[in-house]
Image 1: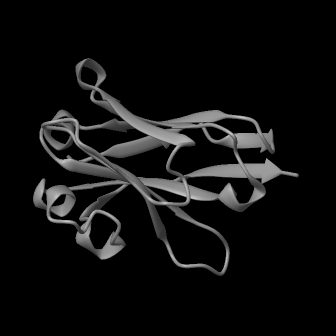
Image 2 (image 1 turned 60 degrees about the horizontal axis):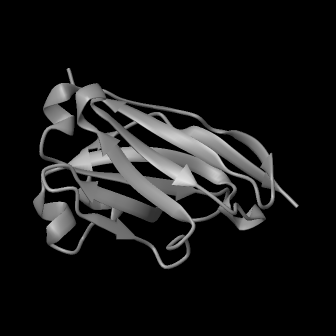
Length: 128
């Protein structure tokens, strides 16, 4: 059974940091495109960052580049999102997602409809 389980969300003040985790079934974590998306109330789901677990190649949205870092721990089948210098506009529900490698290196990593597997989400709230 395919499973993606997020954790690590919470409430922080602007300028603070959080680390999100996405624990994946071994089948999913092994050589897939895995990504973080976020969705704020009334807004579309937005691609934040992605990693191709086969090579470790990473991709970032302009809005988070230089502040967020996506990484993986293959031994734990877990993907992370280190979020530094958080801003109130980062407030959203954060989801992890996974699909075939081509979603990453084909340039579509930020499109939510490309992903077949989703976690349940973890809330991040940043106060000013």
